Length: 315
Image 1: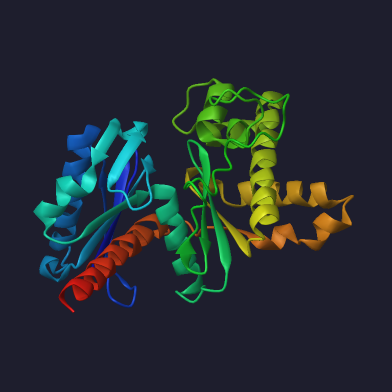
Image 2: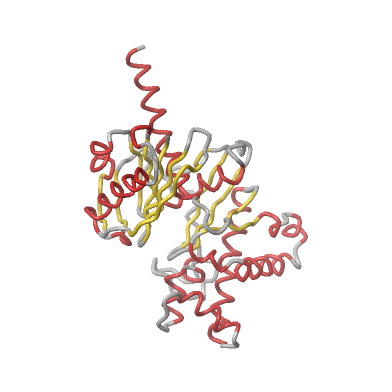
């Protein structure tokens, strides 16, 4: 049995998977703050799976996806600012207490793995899929031939800070008109400037009601997401771009606007029309456990590496 956790800024999603990928149990809990809070959250989530009927003694690996930077092959998470974590060796903190191999991965990359596996039923080894995460910020994960593709320095898919409008709004990275400055949840909330529990949704509702300022922000949102889709297809020739993250909860209101932008940008270009971009973008199903599922796959891969190493050592 494999366990995967998606440790988010407010909520943690945990799943237990059977060998065939069937989700045996799923629990959600509030994420603790700071390094000790994150460690407690992980341990408690595994314990809650046990209380849901999972045989904890049958768990063979635990994978954890969380915000922040995780170097390839590293167990250390840095700059997970949404969790109050500057630096944390999460594996060293929880592996001895869980008693099974533990692996950690950036949450968007974990979600990309999970989305690819769930979308193809594990039979997507000939495909290239880009997972575009629309949340507080914008980032993508790339899965090629069933494996994460990181690039030379682990930054493959970091489309959020590609500038697509030099005269556009200032981005927190210092550039103007970045995709994230147009379509990131934090940037939209800042530019919207009105208190609301869900600023992006409030902006969309105001745009539908005729608010011209909100309509400009909505146009920027659709423009930014469409630009990210074009970039991912043009640079990777991705078979499909799967859109997920909190903003994807807008559903058809988002996807119809993005498709309209893609159609408009291809209107005068036979080349762009030939790429059939609207047919190559889809939304992650609502409520999908993709991030936790992908984290479980990351943990399982570490177990397999342990087994291979043991065989090499002991013959």
